[in-house]
Length: 315
Ligand code: XIL
Image 1 (cartoon, rainbow, N blue to C red):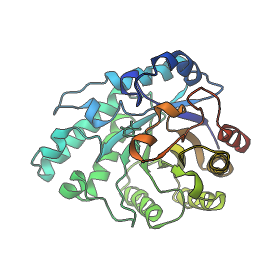
Image 2: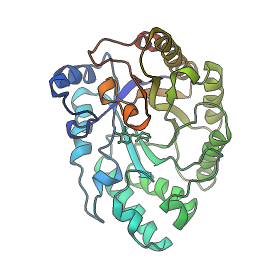
Image 3: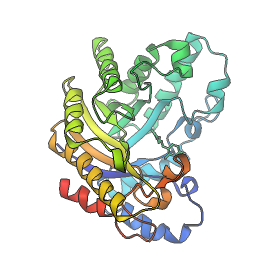
Image 4: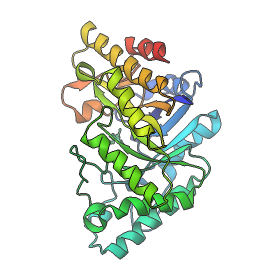
């Protein structure tokens, strides 16, 4: 059953849009309001490029800015992400690895980072985005050197470093049954077969308003994950709109939020929903998807999207 509805948030230095400093007090009071959000995730601060910018040199400052908020408010903390091909420190991609040296580097990274936050994370996204759309493995530096063993290495080490955290495999386009969703199930089963702790599948859920997955297909895919025995969460929900915003696309968006939140609320294995920030000016969407935006639940002027009430209705 649902334990939380939460939001990702960034340390001020990493927030997407400059010039919004005046909005911070209002933003922070919504973020810390436990009637709005029972959980938070650091958008960027725990990623490899921030926490281990040079080999063996660790810096937890950015991640701590967000994780310490959870400690103050009592909100659940989701931790994100230990092993991912993106936002990697440049040295990881330029080093000439052997399987042995890369194994050591992954172990050190996972051990140091997960130990630092030990006991504070409800969950860790241990491996992020290992899959291609057809369910095969992405050719990341980790996969090229180690094959699928890198996933086992990361989960094993995370379990040792923080036995309390739920350990998740997290990816996008996992919101309806597909070759990719089968791939996520395959990863969970591979870990289970080796007796390695794995507790959850994270559906990022970066969706598009006019072609968001139906309620039924989201329910079906969540149930397919739950069959393996793990829990499920929507970890990075946002529903982008092709700009400009109008009544029609806001209605599509409301329906999409309602269906995603509703699917999670209706399947027992789904424990929570996290939106990927909550205030449109701090969304990553306009920077990555040309001509799209307004993907979250609060507009620039802090009025609420119709989708806010769609999500609320579905809870
Ligand atoms: C995004 C952040 O929101 C941006 O600020 C950053 O520049 C790039 O990464 N999948 C993930 C997240 O797992 O970590 C990504 O977050 C969005 C896609």
